[in-house]
Amino acid sequence: MSDHTLTDSVLMLKPLTANDASDWLAGEDEEQIRWFEAPRPAQLADVQRFIESCQESWRDMGNHRHWGIWRIDSDTLLGGVDLRALDNFEVNLSYVVFPQFRRQGIARRASRLALTYAVSSMGAKAAIIKMLLGNVNSRNLSLGLGSYFVGEEPSDAGEVFQVFRVSLPLV
Image (cartoon, rainbow, N blue to C red; front, top):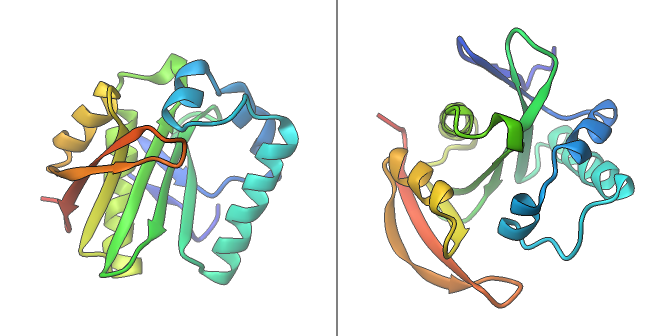
């Protein structure tokens, strides 16, 4: 187990390894491609590069922390949760749960674990959560974490992000 592993009574978050690339790729679906504005479905080489980049950030304790999500009693990869350090003691939070595991509270639990880490290990005082207009599930999760709407901004692909902010630590 990695020293970057987080857990509660249900989930375990741990950094992805090269061995997880095929499982990560298998979890991708059209919804994920749309909400993350991916230009095309990922290829195995894309996922491998992403994992290598995440591992490098962990090694250097860079501004990016990414974990895969597993149940504590299973070796099936469920999705991922991601923090990126921003200015002003803020982090950007993002999450993805693979299709067959959605709507089970996994993203919420994983987000809470990651945000607790953000406070204790990254000094975060707030988290920013951005989602494209129309991403109702992500909006509901964000609000469930106690966030509030702060505005809109253009996405890299020319659409519109709704931006929410949540004060940390969570209650």
